[in-house]
Amino acid sequence: MDSEDFRKWSRRAADWGADYRDTLRERPVRARTQPGDIAALIAPSAPEKPEPMEQIFADFERDIMPGMTHWQHPRFFAYFPANAAPVSVVAEYLVSAMAAQCMLWQTSPAATELETKVIDWLRQALALPEAFSGVIQDSASSATLSAVLTMRERALKWSGNRNGLAGQPRLRVYSSDQVHTSIDRAIWVSGIGEENLVRIPTGGRWRSMAPSALDAAIEADRAAGFLPVGVIGCVGGTSVGGTDDISAIGAIARKHGLYLHVDAAWAGSAMICPEFRHFWSGVEQADSIVFNPHKWLGAQFDCSVHFVRDPDSLVRTLAIKPEYLKTHGKDGIVNYSEWTVPLGRRFRALKLWFLLRAHGLEGLRAMIRNHVRWSGNLASRLAGVPGFEIVTEPMLSLFTFRHQARDESRTDEHNLALISAINDDGRIYLTQTKVDGRVAIRFQAGQFETTEADVEVAFDVITSIASSLNDHAT
Ligand SMILES: *Cc1c(COP(=O)(O)O)cnc(C)c1O
Image 1 (cartoon, rainbow, N blue to C red):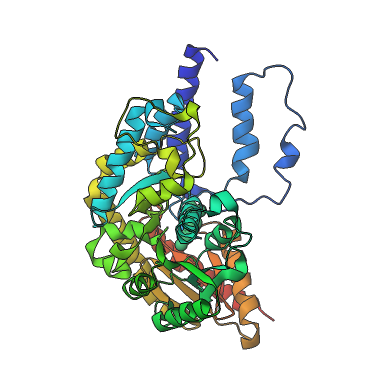
Image 2: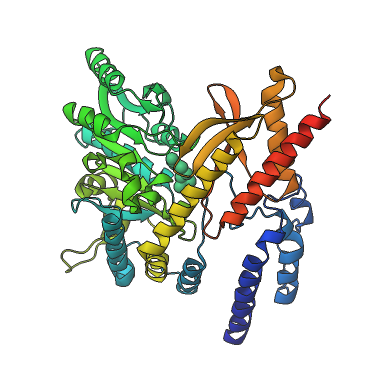
């Protein structure tokens, strides 16, 4: 592709992107294809001869687009959001054009220095103490893995990477039963093993682990010869927003000399609003915190921020310095690849810089406050409709509900059927969870361009489909 064609097709892609965003509300949120439908349209092997761009682009629109679920749809209320504010997409275009590999300071000094700055902007925006620095990762899963490896190495006096875990005492990590599966995987991959992830039962409105139970579990493990290494606190769990009392569990972690990692992958963005910070009060005691600006803040997916109190522990755990990666003669520089498991790193700071400047913290706070308010209003309205039950009250913009089946013994099946019918309808997209063993439907508002009217559409869709399902039930 020569420069003229590159210009032409880049413009075409820009127009396509704007048209796409303009027409999202007309599209079904979730793809309507069946498994294998799209694969059947793709050539079995790569072509030997070049194909014309016109053809490739036309096939993209014809064959690929029908198989896409639209995460930027303003009525995407499923899972948690994976956002891409248009301004951050523009920054990503620039990053793609350069495709810099930002593993070391010298492999793009601006990328490293901007990363340090925007991390500090975010630290201030979240009102975290100056003691925290951080690094941008691809995902919260990677940040949590780095944190678990660090707690492992710290407890083993930095010998685990060298000697492996054989012959060591059994390591123990503590979390609530509400944590994300990324915690399980970090425990597997770090060699600690699932059996050594001690899940403390949760209770109360925010489904928090009882600090006394955490304390007792650590004491009992110590007495049994295990080696407790760390605690993982949850703020805004994926299922229903489960949130630990970070102050209380932080005090226990400190008492036992354990590392504290806080997973606020979704809820962390809301902490730019002072009125929501009570959800993680005590977070300044953490050794590390992860939150994903790509979820609720609007940064183009992917972008996860891993704050650390003591970068030396992280670097001591992860840095490998062969000669070819050394930067001689420069003191005080940061090589962010020493802070992460992957060596190669994309330039993710640029989209944060564009986003934070173009919207300002006030703009982003207004968006998050709106989402929380609209979601709360929807929960209140649903609660007033006969047959609907709010299962878990809103935690920020996430709540769960269920609809009563005609035949009460079939409520789980009825709610699964309701989810399918809603998602087949296409105007909104919701997902389910289980609360105390029973099916509940999750609702969260968090897409960057969602409006109050979109949330009102959700009310109409949910109530009308639920009543027609019951009318048709035999
Ligand atoms: C989304 C989420 C994760 C996983 O995030 P990835 O960036 O996809 O790895 C972990 N924890 C919580 C609470 C989440 O909401």
